[in-house]
Amino acid sequence: MDIPPSDDAWALRFVDAGRRVEMDGETRWLLRGVGGRVQAGTAVAVIGPSGAGKSTLLSLCNLMQTPDAGEVHVFGREVRDWDVRSLRRRVGLVMQQPVMLPGTVRDNLVAAARLHGAPEPDVSAILSEVGLPPELAERPARDLSGGQKQRIALARTLVNRPDILLLDEATSALDRESAAIVEALVMRRVREQGLTAVWVTHDLEQARRIGDEIWLVAEGCVVERGPAAQVLAAPRTAWGRRFLLGTAAEEADGAPAGRDEGMLAHGTEHREEGTRG
Image (tube, rainbow, N blue to C red):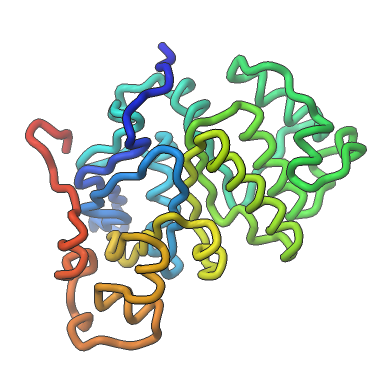
């Protein structure tokens, strides 16, 4: 059953969320102890070193991966209580290396809408929105460049009119001008239509431009979280100072990520009574 848009101010809420894998007989936590909330109608930039768990964080929000600990709530309902198809329409994911469906660009856009029961899109209009010429509609999707595929993947997600948009390095293959078009499109929908965006990026300047908040992920934990200007200019944690300012702090040596005193001051949410685990 689909769920109507919620008046809840929080589009996403993480309660001690974690994800683990088994490797060589040992358990490795890709994410652990993640707590925090994303206000509806805002943009969060997620930054951090490669392999820190940023993409895993996104994947928990629409059940591309399932939490192994804690909970992830979407508009007040835990992700495992959603119908998956409804969840993925409401929470769209644009991956760094998108997979094109067989057929033309038009086929890709129309198929996405049909899959989720959305109205058939104005293909020319949505292509123009992502900075692509309308005549591209009849071109085989497999023949597109990497940057074109990224923009088609974004367009394909937007035709379903998601309430939450997850972007995983969604402009990494784009030149500066094309990236600016995508940024402007997403932020226009955030400001004018109440879209919630969670955007993983390695580009700190992009994070500054698009982020109402910035979350810094390191070693599978959210170690810094707060208003973008504050986090970038004056990070509270040793990890934040090391990553953002290039200063190694003694207290970071050997300290488990996410347990820094400054992070705890940000109000990390801990597991509530009755959470899944």
